[in-house]
Amino acid sequence: AAAAEELIIPPVQINYTQNLINGQFVDAVSGKTFPTYDPRTGEVIAHVAEGDAEDINRAVAAARKAFDEGPWPRMTAYERSRILLRFADLVEKHSDELAALETWNNGKPYEQAAKSELPLFIRLFHYYAGWADKIHGLTVPADGDYHVQTLHEPIGVAGQIIPWNFPLVMFAWKVGPALACGNTIVLKTAEQTPLTALFVAKLFHEAGLPPGVLNIVSGFGPTAGAALASHMDVDKLAFTGSTDTGKIVLELAARSNLKPVTLELGGKSPFIVCEDADVDKAVELAHFALFFNQGQCCCAGSRTYVHERVHDEFLEKAKARAVRRVVGDPFKKGVEQGPQIDTEQFEKVLRYIRAGIKSNATLECGGDRFGSKGYFIQPTVFSNVQDDMLIAQDEIFGPVQSIFKFKDLDEVIRRANATRYGLAAGVFTRNLDTANTLTRALRAGTVWINCFDVFDAAIPFGGYKMSGIGREKGIYSLNNYLQVKAVITPLKKAAW
Ligand code: ADP
Image 1 (cartoon, protein in one colour):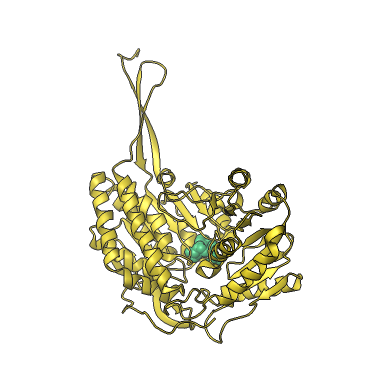
Image 2 (tube, rainbow, N blue to C red; image 1 turned 180 degrees about the vertical axis):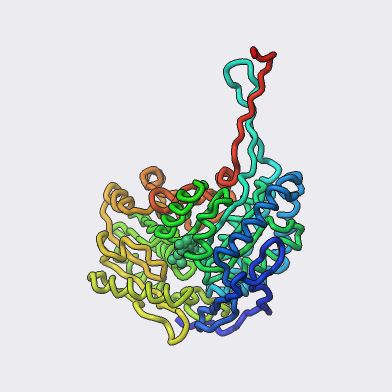
């Protein structure tokens, strides 16, 4: 469908391209830079310092010193909370520019970045600022004449590796809880999207964050990322990305210093439309569940299971909705879908579409690139998809909806769970018994009933099976960044 015409680009400049180490912007030790692109055109928009092992060493040394000697873990929790709140206020002040920079570097619709992701980012820092002074241990009624208490202490230097699909939101999920608990951080951004993290990290320092507490290194996975995962002086690793890379970083962490690791990985989430569904609403929600963010969501509802009673009507309407999807310049008002992130993802999605056609799934619409430049792909719908097809099993990470038909609940439960992933699931029904049955039977870290992609800061997120280890957001994320120390004191004069 044609896009509306009005461009909405707030003025934005690229001011920060160096690594941020110990509160200073610095070039890479090697002096190297790498280009970062505008996915609308494939044009270079900036050259960014290319960090590798040596830059990670310097960043970890700064974070170590800030943790061992700096004020951050020693200041009152209330003071830390105030800095998080001041930071959130500064982000709010700059949110139009940040949303524009996010769109420029990532390709997501500007309206989505500005109206949904920046508010989520700010809300998350408010949420964890609220936790900072509410983290405390327990008094334990142990046997014997002992006074026993637990201290909840920050774990130390946190290494964090984030992906490119939600550069700012991923920054928030990682940095918010780690700082609320009093840790220091070295964060490596994704090589595709280095820009917004540098901007917000600068704002964090303006808000009063002491130097060395939050260090940002731009660079590639096998160099900078691997150096961080295997660093002997990093006390905890948090990773979001593909399952294959998750296995690599878990192994690097184990082989080095056995740092605990949380992983948020891939998915192949079912979206189940039950026989009682209001078809129009189900179509709209299933469409959103898959196509949101160009389909580049780890929790995308990428297996749309539709009950046979409503299947044909659903299919016609889902196809019509995909055809109506507004693809175009993400800076234009009303645009729903921008380009994929880069040429590699673009080619990969097109390969999966060809595999779908070859395996005899029915291509209902789309199936090719959109336009002639940049990484745009037509909204694509396949029907007659069978569970053993490649497009039914692999994470495509693009605007490709696969529609499956089912007959009864037991069958759809079995099929929905027959995947190596377990990140999320969607259920669309008005029947409470059906909703309860599916909720309990689905092996996934999130079940959205009659909604999808609700990402409130208080709601834990993470995967079963090969979708990951641990949970982010909410109260659950605090445990990732705390050590528990048991302290035992005799109540009476000790026998010795
Ligand atoms: P994608 O395939 O979507 O780009 P990745 O899992 O490769 O997902 O990337 C997610 C993050 O992991 C990025 O920051 C990337 O640089 C990083 N990464 C990639 N390979 C490695 C690696 N071998 N070690 C550590 N980090 C890596």
